[in-house]
Image 1 (cartoon, protein in one colour):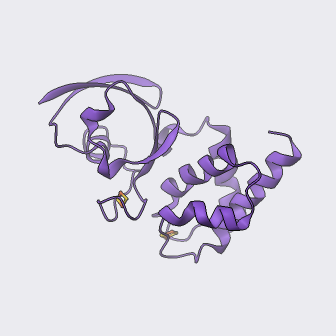
Image 2 (cartoon, rainbow, N blue to C red):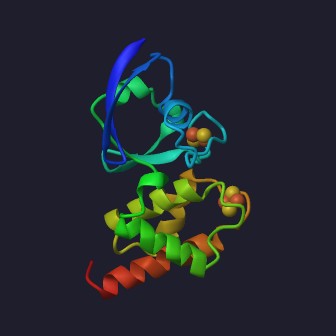
Length: 158
Ligand code: FES
Ligand code: FES
């Protein structure tokens, strides 16, 4: 067992963790952050994507102990993140979700797109979404939702 200190949604915690425990399992099972979803558990589907030190990462292929000192943001801690809030409203308006299983992770990838690639066009948005599988929507609503936020941010010079 190893001691690990993490800041999770603004709260600093220290926990004792088995070295083989993934970040996803640690956050879901010890911290009850079940907005992190697991699909493939080997880094392919993107359902477990969260933010670590400001970047989207797959939490199923990271060990919790390897994130010692990191700042972690999950969907449960995103109510005060204005980009996530805008994306959630846009996903709702543009039918960017059906069952919602992919949605928390999709929002973090979308957040990365709109903040890192402010000039992205639809083709680039689709390329950037390649690591997040959605089994329901056919992606059209997701792409529309992200493009709407991109247009809005451009109009506001954000
Ligand atoms: Fe992590 Fe599929 S559950 S990428
Ligand atoms: Fe069901 Fe994306 S909304 S998997």
